[in-house]
Image 1 (tube, rainbow, N blue to C red):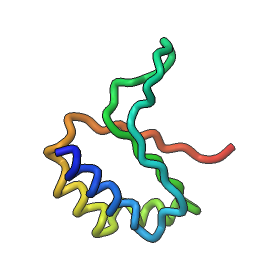
Image 2 (image 1 turned 135 degrees about the horizontal axis):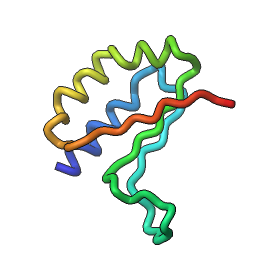
Image 3 (image 1 turned 45 degrees about the vertical axis):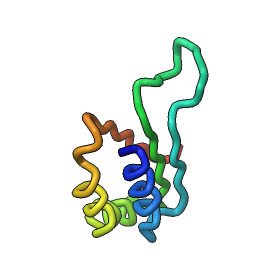
Image 4 (image 1 turned 30 degrees about the vertical axis):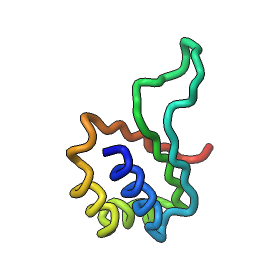
Length: 83
């Protein structure tokens, strides 16, 4: 399952509106302020909201959801804008 998910993530970040990305897993740190309750993280950077909107309905993104939705119990999204 992990191999399937990692391969799918690597394909997902090929969406052309993604300017930059980071795929990760929890770091092996042990401090009270660190959240290690997740298995994977994906940070995607878009040039603007329009590009992020394109990503949301992009066939590659929709295929990722279809192929992998049985692999997660919960998804948490943090949308942010630069300050």
